[in-house]
Length: 405
Image 1 (cartoon, helix red, strand yellow):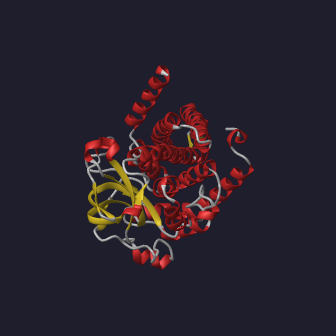
Image 2 (cartoon, rainbow, N blue to C red; image 1 turned 180 degrees about the horizontal axis):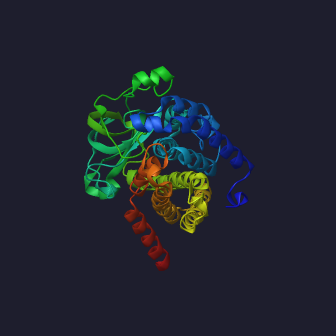
Image 3 (cartoon, one colour; image 1 turned 120 degrees about the vertical axis):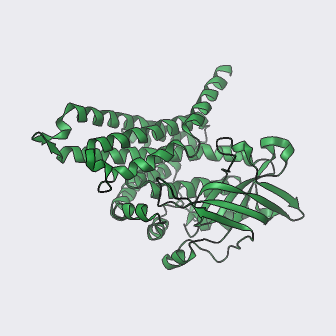
């Protein structure tokens, strides 16, 4: 891809900085944290210090003051080395912080965003439930107004940063008679479950945040991939949430989180693209040094054609991701382009990682090489932020809507 199509000088500088950080700080520990399934607090602190946890937010709010293309570059470059680190940036920034930035009051932004943008605490987004996955409108968590507060009851599943986070945006039904128009969103706070580790590294906890009684996290999920990312259930038992923590107007929660998901899908597309490109680079490197029948296996047509296909699809994925990122940055509707980027790149990540393992042969099936971890990390990209089936549904509806228009 011609860098000049989407990138300016500042983008190239960001890419070089993140690329160096990924190689020097993330690559050496990625397999370790995957194996023990622990949140990499030391690197999270370094990422906060580099401004990687608040890339697109203004300096006034504690962010780096960069644009959305820079933000996608950060996710892309981190995911080339380790998807868990890339996901931490994506989930924290788009899901945990952007709803407060975009839909919050001035007081809410000033209270919560500097803590999140600086990386002092981690954020998360509570949407998915036991019976509300692809059908996000099927939310069952309730919020009942009682005087100057709401009382929340219910639970959320598969929430990134569920245990390690302290600030969450959560959806709940405020008016059951209104369907999706009866869903609202709230800002909730709880204490980091990994408090000892957070205090050891000086990040992940802020004493000024009041934990809300009845708001807790459940068991940590033991996952196939993204193992250095914290995923848990969130539980609400008569949680009293101050009325000023309502995010946006009552009944606007569904509309607002659909906008959030559009942006989130571009982020997962960038993450998927990073996994695919990382796997390709590993396969190309291995094929150039691995010899069979007296020559490097990259010279065999069967291997060379696989590498050619991977490179071509990655190039296409870059255009989809950065085209959608540009549209998002310009305030244009990205519903279709985000779904296309997410669909193509997530499925590309699976194809590329499987090919990378095949090129590595038996070694690819062992933990001696990172491609087996990359394949495990790739699978969830076809599920999270809307399954491939949902992306195809979104795209087809947009095509028909445009035809009617």
